[in-house]
Length: 324
Image 1 (cartoon, helix red, strand yellow):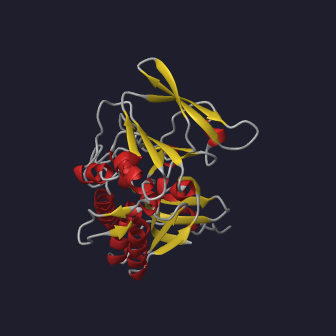
Image 2 (cartoon, one colour):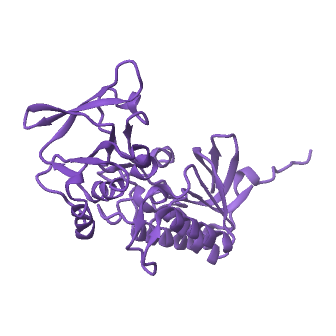
Image 3 (tube, helix red, strand yellow):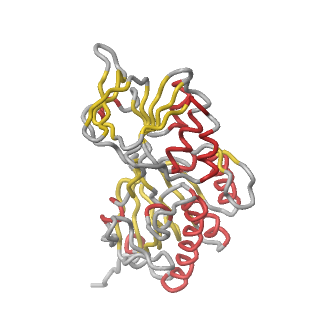
């Protein structure tokens, strides 16, 4: 099926793009593997304008409903391949479906960073986790460690404080870098939280004869110690998902993000990008900035369709039959 616009990604950037595209009366398909992206797994959000307090999944649900009310079609699917076919694009999903569009918005989001330690892969979801919202309740009344020193890790500690009996926050820095309101909330947890500074996790030790995490080894200035925990949560940032963009020849910046101009245009005609897969606002990545870039990308896509929308995709062009 041919669409005017396909948006890959169902996070704040993708859904905001869909809202604006719908308002522009663009025939739009939104396709993504994980509804809501990182925001859907977030705890309570207090800083989205116009909404005093809202759960991350609920905010994404409202965006989805708004986009659908303006005519956007939204489906679940893991996009594994994108091809430029003349003036148009073909999008292929893991389950064998194919869709075409005249323009494309990449709102691919990011993937959580890993520590890169031995046993990490084997212990993932068996004692090692990357989403406290998702897996924190598994550790009710137990002891956990959180790795990271930024706002995300502190927010994670605050959420885990509802479940865990004891929380160790491990950071390689000499101080934490969190929003004051989140830091103050963490302080209210009192002795439940212990911050370990100038320290990195050097090893994850699995249980013997049973799945799970036995303990972690810590390196503090070259001195190795151990800490027995039931679970470890890694909150050290994320890497942009850019493989699909690279397959189209989209240019990346020096930090590996999709390079865009002020109107979210990439170096490939008809391809725009939005959200955390770009570095448009630098390290400041919030739902409001993702939504803003999504709105701009949809506006640029609308303008591009005005220039090139009448051109026929080769895949839909009728073959010329010569007489004789």
